[in-house]
Structures are given as C-alpha cells and as structure tokens.
Length: 354
Image (tube, rainbow, N blue to C red; front, top):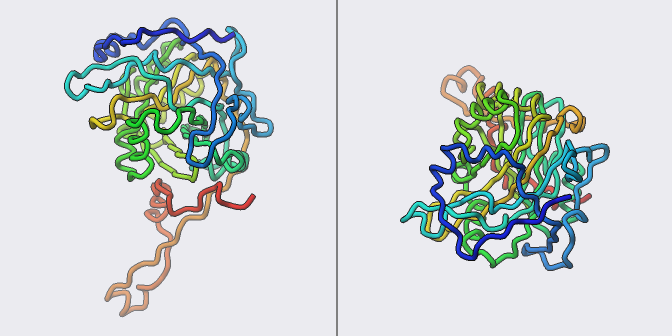
C-alpha cells in the first residue's frame, strides 16, 4: 500500500542544488515516497463542482488500461503519484541567493499513463485519440496538462495530469502558467523543464538517459529535442519528439527496450526566471515501475491529417513560360506541417460536437 507523505519543517532548509545534482544524489536507491489518496475539484474558470477522487475521473481506453496505479510493492506495469517535496526548486529570492528549496505540492496530479502504437507518428493526442478527446469534453470543467513522448517505432507515451491547485492560491504559478499558455513556441521551449530521478535501472539504461539528456539533472528539454505545443479549451499539451536527434533517438530505443527494468520518477515544471515567477512550483510528477512497453501498448489506427498545400508565388520566368501558378506539395511544405506546433488556429477538440 502507498506510504503516507513525509512531513517537512515550517521553514524549509535551503539546498545547494549544484552539489545536490552533480554528486548524483538524484540516483536514489530507495523508491520515492508515495502520496496518500487525494481528491481534486474543479479549479478552472469553467465553474465549480463537487470534489472528486482522481480515480473517479480516470481516462479509460478500451483494451488499454494495463498500465495502472500501483497496488503493492512488487507490482509492475504501474505508476505511482509521488511527493513533489523530494525535489528542490528555485526559491523566492533565487535571483539573488541562487538557493533552492523543497517544492510545494505539484499543481497538477497524474490521472494515468498510456502508450499507443501507430503506423505513423501521432502528434496532438488530445485531438488524435478519440477516447481522450471525448474525455476532455466530458470533463470540460477541469484543467489538464498533457505530456507526450514520441519515441522510436511510432510509440506515443501519454501522461495525463489534472489540475488540483485552486486558482489564486499561488499567484506566481498562475502568472507563469498563463505566460506559457499565451506565449509562442520559442518561449514555451525555452521554459519547459524535465527532471529525471532514476531509482533503479540497469547500467546501460542509465547511460542511455545520460545520452538522452546530457546529464542526470534538470534539463530544458526544448534545448535538446524538438517540442510541439498544442493549446485547447481546457488543456495544454506538450509533445517531445525523441526522433529529432539521431543520438537521442538511438538512446530512446535502448530506453524503451529496457523500461521493464526501470523504477524512475519523471517530473516537469515551467522554469521561473523573473521575480513575479518565483518561487517555482512543480507542474506534475509521477513514478513508473517496471513497465513493459510491448505489454502495455495499445494498437491504435491513426491516420495523420493530409499535408497543407502551398501555392507557389509567380515569378517573371514562370509568368513568361506558364509555370508560376502551379500548386505543388514540397518537402518543405510537409516539414512545415510537422513543425507547426502551435495550433491555436486549429479547432479545439472539446469544442467539436461528439
């Protein structure tokens, strides 16, 4: 059964974060402290509703619930919600003293994890996966953060988080999240941070993570890999494309094959750099325990949208010889479609009928 969350002193002790990470103290030998069962209520601007357990708003996909909440110490193919206070983040006066403190509770709590296997790379899962699109529409009064890992072999690993932090309780976090929602892709990629905590893994897998990130420490993932961002009525979605780097792609392949031997926490936050964005608060985190991807993956029939066609601009040469107005699809056009990661112009999935 899950352990109760640890208690911390009222005045947290400042941590020297450089020593904390460079000495490898994030390679914990003990599993993370699991959170006790919690409840959530509507914290969005879409209206209030009665508090519900996160388990009561579980996203279910037919034949795809093998990856489940941990039920015991020896359980496998499972995830666990963990205490964000294990990870030090930038404090209120970080710009002056460079000190980090144990994080407050995460703003978003994990609903579930799922892995989809498709014939084509699948971007924007909130729109592409029917069951998720329906789920978001049915829970339109809640706010979600979705993190997808696009990995070798056309796998899409979906981490779905629901907001539990009431609006107005942490104005610095609300301010930064609003900047992230309304900002451009350059801003989002420069602020979205990933923190890996490996508790148990074969040495070859640890080496792969180092190749993936550079070091076992907090990393701005957008500086390493291509990220795609999608904004919906009640969600923000970030897609991380591990295939955007040949070295990372190879490392991710090893990581996927060795995932069944891993116990690791993945944590995410938006980096605070200005005084009105501090102290930082964890966006969301969870721990995966010995997940066999081939076992939990869901075969999903996904057809990508057709590429956009671009009308070529006429030139004096084309006008003279009649070749300047032809509509052609080019490799650049297709690349533009793939890289067009900010889709405010697209129809939001939970505004569609059905």
